[in-house]
Amino acid sequence: MCRSTALANGTPTQRQAFVPQPVVGRTPAQLRGYIEGLDPISNRPVMQEIIEGLANPLNDNDLKDMSFERSTPRLLPPSGEADLEQLFMDNRWTDFQPIVLPIEARVAAMLAGTSHGPDETVGQLRPTFFREAWESTVEKVAVNAVMAGARPEYFPVILALAASGITARQSSTNSFGMISVVNGPIRHEIGMNCGIGAMGPYNHANAAIGRAYGLLSQNLQGGSVPGDTYMGSLGNWYAQGATFAENEEASPWTPLHVQKGFKPEDSTVSIFVGGWYTQAGYGPRETWREKLRRTFRACEPYQPPVFVMDPLSARGFVAEGFDSKEKLIEWCAENAEMPAREYWDDLWVQTLLRPHAVAGVEPYASRLKAAPDELVKLWQPEQINIVVTGGETQPAWKMFGGAWRNSTFSVDSWR
Image 1 (cartoon, rainbow, N blue to C red):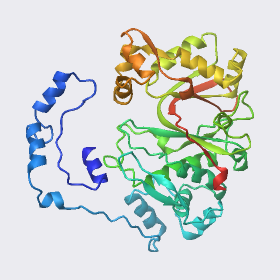
Image 2: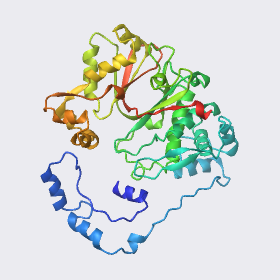
Image 3: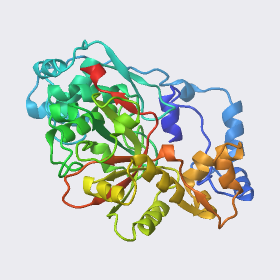
Image 4: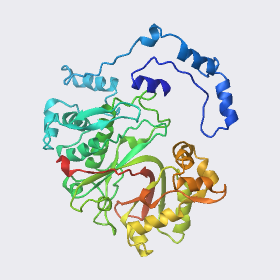
């Protein structure tokens, strides 16, 4: 990862020294041992590597490969279909599934799905915060939409995802995957499925939009190459394209996009960053409270959930007195707890949240002061989201890691 970061920042031959891992959760004595010990890569003393790296004059190796060629041709030379398919795979322009070749006529047809010009800038994407952001145009997004097998009527949703600035192929070691939810009239206009099998591969619009989001993310941010621009240790199948629509008509509650400040007649797409863990259940049954408390404790505490439930399950919660999403969210926030010792033992709580706690930022500071066996609350109500979808064949629900960060975007602006 250090070498990848140096490459991304234009210093591919930057001198580097390494210490053993992990560094999170180690005692001061253990960390001092790292510094006073050997570099695990070079097997030389760490401090000697650092001193020489800072003090020695630059040599020829330090100065080579200091520029990048970023220009790409708009068109490829004519070739046979099989050869072009192989070329796309060899260059990692695909998700390694068959693609629709983006010939000019197909791209032009896709561009007819929006009133925006082909050269108009859509936005910028990058796989992680330390890499430079790559700018994309409407035409470049259209190329990826064609490759994914999308239809022109899907294009405004795909453009909204591309304009979000949130990549579907994030380069975290956590193996994140993005989950996106479509709301508003466009769901029915383009034939999205929000009924039976809504979250599965049973609908063309759902599948093609999700796949297009993944393809445009890897191709318009500089690639997703394991060990270089992708560092997710396990990977994540949600990166293939987890896009579905909310079943607003069957839901007893306010739709997601209206909760986020849009009008019912607006069409939007919301992106949930994470997709790391999945929990599941049925109900609410008689012991639903105990079930959910256990479920919360099994979630990764640094990543708040998006609670996705079938309309039958939603109406079951209404019967329990939760006549709004907000009431159920409040109950979840109040009952999502774990002992402070377990909470602070989580790798990413230590990495991402402990600095806030040490700086006195609430609610993290209070959690840090808690006794080891004291229960601490995991999330604030505004961090938890509920989406209703599914075909009412059983009162099923799923809970995904899915932080929402002001990430509901207008689709109508891209029509």
